[in-house]
Amino acid sequence: MSTPLLRIRGLRVRLGTAQILHDVDLDIAQGSRHALVGHNGAGKSTLLHAIAGTVRPRAGSIMLAGRDITNLAPHRRARLGIGRTWQHPALCGSLTALQNVTLAMPGHDPSRAHRALMASGLGAHIDTAADQMSYGLRRRLELVVALAAQPRLLLLDEPSAGLSPAEINSLIMQLTSLPPDTSVVLVDHDLDVVSAIAHQVTVLHHGRILATGAAEEVRRAPLPHQARPRTVTPVFAPPPAQDRPVVLDVDRLTTGYHGAPVLAGTSLHVTAGEIVAIAGGNGTGKSTLLNAIAGLQPVQAPTTIRVGGREVHGLDAAGRARLGIALVPQDRRLFAQLSVAENLVVPRPGGSGPLGDPAALFPALAGRLRQRAGTLSGGEQQMLSIARALTTTPRVLLLDEPFEGLAQSVAEQLWLAITELARGGMAIVITGHRTDQMAELGARVLVLTGRGLSGPAPARGEQRRSSGPYQRPYR
Image (cartoon, rainbow, N blue to C red; front, side, top):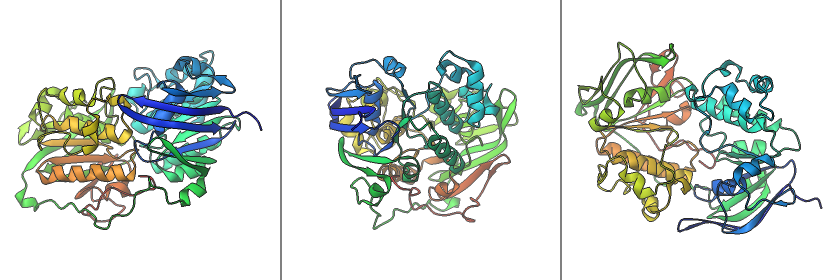
């Protein structure tokens, strides 16, 4: 039997007081496409971190092509052929797409970088700075950067999260056309993506390997991390419109980047206790809209934004936060090296959310107050990001793709918390790139296109009361 490209034996990882991985054994063959699945907090991303060297194990060994790399630094592992993407894109934001890829290329050859971007369908964005690209484009660019170094082992953490269906299809084509000797270890909650890419699937459950097998076999198996249908579906129904004052009033919002318009004349009105879901493809301006409301994106005339009847023109992001606007960005932007408790006191020392303890909505955080935020699972980080926003006691809560990359059970917890906040009178705006998802999320659905906001969502033909987050495998 040939030696596997990657061999892991007895791997244990402890982060703070939490034991994340327990005696993990795993072999990845040369050229294998291998997926890791499981609920949020199962240890999937931590295992990728351990392979890449960004997390050090307490025990066990990691061998790459017969060489012990257990104690090697991440940059030395990269030189040995380990490439990776992150749960949220990690790029040099001030550099262009071409410059990002050129830096990763052996020999830093810009002509090869140019060809790689053209082949990946990003040719129109070669001279665009990474921080000026939409989230979906940044995800695609990060994969090009990872592949530019020609890795023999590619680690992908939630590569399909935040992508439109068309972009997901493009991602699948790109990964299935990799050289046959390139090995891939993939973490993704979308089992359709896993089935299309992976030869083998390993299920992690509370840091232990529960099963390994062919993708279709694992898909058919009744695994404990698969959420069961609810017998009672929580329904969100806001009070009658005539009884709700307008909290957020956005009129003719106009903004763009470097002279190129993104939003022109967009209007949005949200009442107390209402959830408005905004759908649209990547690049249509969903994040730009929320950033403009929060004061992170400059606007032009004739824009007016009012909170509780007060015009926010001239207020920076901090001033708008004091007025009652809270933003939970798509990439969460937690202080990774600070503890959960420290993250919660940063916005307003000694502050608390509208329900008292800002973490009260999320019991999963109660036992992790001393744990570093960067070591939390994706679902726990999303909970912390929302809890942190609540410490400012907002009147308006802006949530950018809050369910992205989350297991179904965690998405349901978040949805219940969000509806509880709305019942308390908070005005909530949620964005998402899937119209069919967004139609399930809020009492009112608007679609953002190049012509501005329209509604209700055309995929449904009518406004709908919410019945919880849109259900997909492992979401």
